[in-house]
Each structure stands twice: as C-alpha cells, then as structure tokens.
Length: 189
Image 1 (cartoon, rainbow, N blue to C red):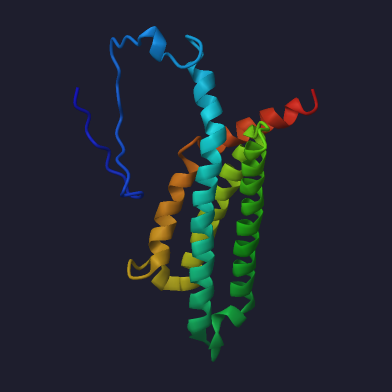
Image 2: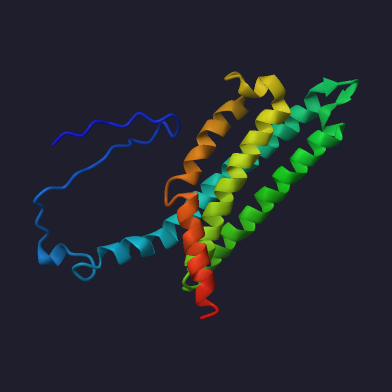
C-alpha cells in the first residue's frame, strides 16, 4: 500500500516515511540469522551505525564552533571583537571541549569495531555525547551570533535545527543512557 512521506524540518535530502508489512512470507534461504532472532541482529547493526551518527554530529559540532569563532572575530562591541569578552570566550571554550571529547568517544568506538572488539558501550557514548555536543554547540553558536543567530541569512540557525535529529535517530538520548548503564554494569557483575 502507498505510504505518505513524512515532512521533516531537517535532513531535507532524506526520504522519511513509515513502512508496514502485512502477511509477508520470507523464504528460508532469505532469512538473516535464526528465526525470531531479528531483534538481536538489528541491535548488533547499531554498533556499526551509531559511530557514523556520532561522526555526523561531530561535523555539526565542529561547524558550529568554526562559525562562532569566525563571527566572534568579526563582530565588535565596546570597541573590540567579541571573542575578547570573557563570556564569549567561555562559550567557545565549552564548545571546543565538547567537540574534542565527543570526537575521542566516537574514535574509540570506531577503533574497537575495526579491531573486532564489541563496541556497544563506546558506540552509545560516542553517539550520545556527539548529539549533546552538536546541540549545545549549535545553541551556543546562535548565542554568539546574538539576534543574527536566529536569522536564516546566517548558517547557525540551520545548524541548530539540524542538530536535534542527532538526539533522536539510531536510538534517542534516553535509550543511549540505558545502554551505557547496562553495559557499564556488565563490567562489575
């Protein structure tokens, strides 16, 4: 049956829609894994895809930092560029710190995967902290831009809208926290 396309405010190049399967029979030779084990297969796929989402969020977090830095060097108040004001400097320091820490977590999850180690723990940390870095950096970039940050003529307005999706797909922030907590406990049990 025909399914209508979902209208989303970001990721405009993606085609988002729901799919419903009814009365589907899969031939035995096309079954992936053990019958009834599809959920486990899908969950293992996230160990590959979450680092990718973390990497995408890193790109947005970095772009927000770069845009805020460039703008803070151009915009002047009280006779000096705003990057010289402590409040703006502290925001940019927070942005740099979040970007660098998220990058380490994403890289660790990728390194574990490349070495054949189970990376569920770091994949969730990288995905979650990457989403946090992207959202907070985008928000701080808008703040650095002041009123211009909310204007579509400046890139940070779109970054802020685009950042939100990283808290949702490949598992919400709350799901990542459940996974991290569960994986952390396995080290002590």
